[in-house]
Image (cartoon, helix red, strand yellow):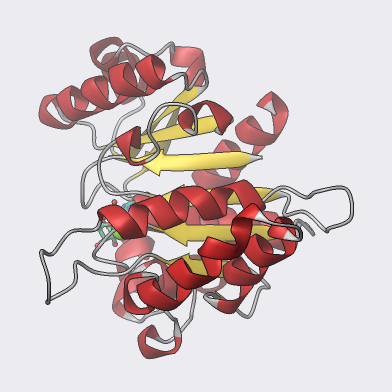
Length: 257
Ligand SMILES: Nc1ncnc2c1ncn2[C@@H]1O[C@H](COP(=O)(O)OP(=O)(O)O)[C@@H](O)[C@H]1O
Ligand SMILES: [Mg+2]
């Protein structure tokens, strides 16, 4: 299963994805996460020290050389090898791949790193011989255009993260239009930092997603406390409202698979 989380900075993508990935991993699934947000804090949220995780932007030349060999025999092993060599596994067994920040040198373009991410996404599922990942989750700043046409269609779910405000709804409405246009069929509206259950009706109408396909994550000070202490939300506050709401999101995804 492939999942992408979209939405502007600060809406809660990294919090939601890291908690969701940890829950799924603890249920015994093999999980891979891609951090394609240039502010790259998914790895840190998952407990991996910043400097220990290789980035695609930092190893672009080597990776591109290895990708040159993808045309011949053994392409799957090469692709999977790149995926595994330029990533790290956290304490919960989640493999984390980081695209990296906009490079200082050159033209500051992330395009080639994004195209590497797109290629690597083809090696998440197994060929007949290999072991496959059960779930791959992409944490992306803004919209699904990072995937482009074709690849977007491979995604089973687009989690459209939003805050409960009209401004945030407008960004999400555009993201959903784009995602549908690219062929993503299952768009789930995730209304984060919600302080009233009325948000579901109001936000789903504004964004244009059915209420049945919308979930709410309550505003919860535990999330901020966990962030402040660099703690794993699920471990530090297992009984919190946010953890319980993210568990509902997980169940919805597993039910709709
Ligand atoms: N449900 C919530 N309740 C309160 N604060 C939250 C909640 N979800 C996220 N936050 C806070 O919002 C900020 C942005 O969250 P983050 O997950 O980093 O967003 P993004 O990855 O979309 O930029 C963080 O400071 C986080 O602690
Ligand atoms: Mg983030």
